[in-house]
Length: 342
Image (cartoon, rainbow, N blue to C red):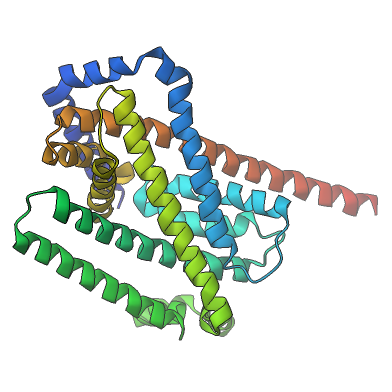
């Protein structure tokens, strides 16, 4: 896996270098147009947009937790979200590792089993929302691009297949998704790892996950979470692209910014195995803007600014995770001191 990851990183760097070499003069011009005002406050405005995005996404996670949450605890959930999502920004495959980190971060006021169940549902809902975003992009592309009908039909068919898979996944979550996935692993591996006590924990986790589907009231929480994963994500992504391009001195209509953002989301999601989406993210924006008749160098510039924004939030997330580790150490030392004094 390490060799494969290194190979993908090398490929991504090569793509970046090819893109920069191809659009070097124009890219430098677009970046120079941004000026010192951009780096002084406009860039931080773009960074701040995603603080609101994190808050809305955290609320989408919070409604899946069947217990009272205070304002201070919700703030801690926001920190947990930022820290967990930082792993996904660094490596798309790291998103799987980031989800349990969120549950561990809030274990002092949400039982780990409950938090993990909410995290699994939250990730499923996030995937469903991304598929709906792709459908939005297909709908927009139908009106603003001269795309052959058969291409639209094939893309829509792929969307239907993806949506059907997600519906099947949600149905499976009602009857025990974790146990189902484990039983599909090699029998020797399952026999070696799983014990009766672990099977009990897995079934308890599945029961927590299935709880959301037990009544209309709990299903309402599911739909609220889905809305939090669709509308704020769409608004923040489109606004970011729109502002960057306009700050660079190019007027772009909002529906074009919408297409550029969703096209980039679709392409990077399809090539999810590329660490940090190196090269693919910048290339997707270059391709999307060129399809709309803009300079591909503009798309490359958008990709660079978005990557810098991603670096900022990744750094914040890593600092949060580091602080959580230090906090755990301090708590452990305090407990030892209390035991010694007693």
